[in-house]
Every structure is written in C-alpha cells, then in structure tokens.
Image (cartoon, rainbow, N blue to C red; front, side, top):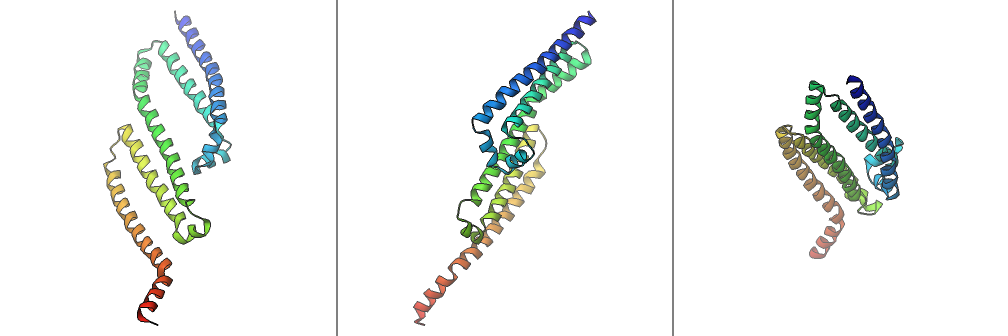
Length: 205
C-alpha cells in the first residue's frame, strides 16, 4: 500500500514537470508573439527584467513552469494521505488565491505606475520637458503610485495598513503643496517677460 502511494507521488511529480515545461513553452511563445517584449520596454521594471535576460518569453515561461511544478508537488504530497501534510496543504491552498491576487495587484500596479510616469515625462518635447520639470513630476507620479500599489497589495493580503494610509495622506498633501509651489514658480518664470511687456504698455514706458 505504501509502495503504491509512493509510486503515485512520483507519477504526479513527473507529470507535473512534463506538463509545466510544455505549458510554459506554449504560453511563453504566445506572450512573446503577441507583443510581450514591446510591453516590457515601456516600463522601467520591464526594461530591468530584459537587461537581466528575462524577456517576455523567458519570464512567462518561468512563471508558468514553476506554478505548475508547485501545484504538482502539492497534489503529490496531498495524495500521500499524511494528516499533517494534508492539513498544511489545505491551509496553503486556501491562502493561495489571496497570495496570487496580491502578486497580480503588485505587478500590474507597478507596470501601470511605470507607464504613467513615463507618459508624463514624454508628454512634451525635450526642450519643454526640462523647463516644466516633467521628469521630476513623472518620478513623483511613479513613487506615489508605487506606494498606492503596495498599500493595495498588502491590504489584499489582510495586513493592517492603517499606518500606511496615514503616511499616504500626509505624503499626498506634501506632494500637492510641492506641485502647487513648483507650478507657481514655473508659470512665473515663463510669464515674466510677458508681464514686463504688459507693465511697460500700461505705464507707457
């Protein structure tokens, strides 16, 4: 009876390895052919992954493979029928959807944050970008959205993020004040010559 359980365990593990490799290869090719690399290039995280030799194919291939491997190992352990293993695996499987959801929120949020930050930076010509401080504004947008993403991911895990909300509110007020002051300085700098012309016209000098 024990030998049969061990045999079933090995069969499940081997099947999981084979299925993981095949499925990872298929999904990796699908993502790569549908523009995965171009999507990664639009974000800072994506470009960092590509510099680390993790293009869209290798990234999705690895994630898919290890997800299938993990599922196969858990199912193989569950098939042994050992009470302590069964209880632990069931608890882990109950928590797994929450963990996956938080990971999706974190990854998607960071990608969107990077994209919006880069969009702000590139929303004007290079000459006006430095004058208007768009590079700084873009970085600030990224930082704020990173913080929001992290808060949402931790909140989905069930962690108490009250202190993060307090810091986020204070941070948002500080950013709003800084942006307001910077906007006033920029507008004043841009319009200073025009204001001089208006004053000269009014005073007749």
